[in-house]
Amino acid sequence: MERIMGGGMLPLVLTSVGVLLLYRILVRLRRGASVHGAVVVITGASSGLGKECARVFHAAGARLVLCGRDAARLQEVVQELSTFAPRTVVFNLAKADCVEKAAQEILKCYGHIDVLINNAGISYRGNILDTNMSVQRDVMETNYFGPIALTQALLPSMVQRRSGHIVVISSVQGKIAIPYRSAYAASKHATQAYFDCLRAEIEHLGIPVTVISPGYIRTNLSLNAVTGDGSKYGVLDKTTASGWEPRDVAGAVLKAVRQKSRDVVLAGPVPTVAIYLRTLWPALFFKLMASRARKEQRRKEE
Image: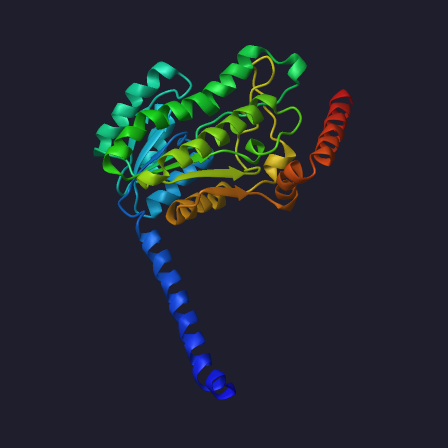
């Protein structure tokens, strides 16, 4: 028996491990190559993470359809990506009556789409007691109703081809809620739930759904955030300033598309632990959030 194990089994085990590693490498290479030539639609593509996604996917050889509200800023991105110049579709995702028409324009660009990246969004900073309901609704329109309306408008074309990939950029705040972010956290929680349902419903069609939940990203999101009365927040938070580089997050989005990942959290150890704490020890999580709220209130009063 020892002779068999020493002389026969070890080479067999090593050979098996080698074959498995080679298979994984080949699968990764094949997944990486699949982005080349793919039609990728990116919303919110004129700045921040959307712009970086445009750069990263363009470098990977994708054919891009860039979407946003500002035609001039979209054109600046197009000029930067001169090789395989992207197409653009200008519309306001928060305007429900614009989305269906925009979806038709998107499909006309190349006749189909392979990847839809729902990236456009707006942030919020405010006290619930001082926040107008109109602001709550506006944030939901941009962060939730807009992306799902566009997804549902484009989904039938994917179902018809039995091909496609839907990606949504959510947030860690779609998994946990922190004080003074009610409208934003609520919109991202709704987003997480909707796309989790969608994933389950269309998995048998071979259309993957990826939810990506970053922590803070070094963009102008907090500067452009709305407050309780609808005005701009206009402050670059310290947490945002020390957040992830947009290019790194865009690279993670590309990797998630290549690997057909289902749910990706891009955050440091503290928010990652908080996600688990909310489920496993909610009483402690609630106490920590209440303490955070009191500290933030004291800072504002000072």
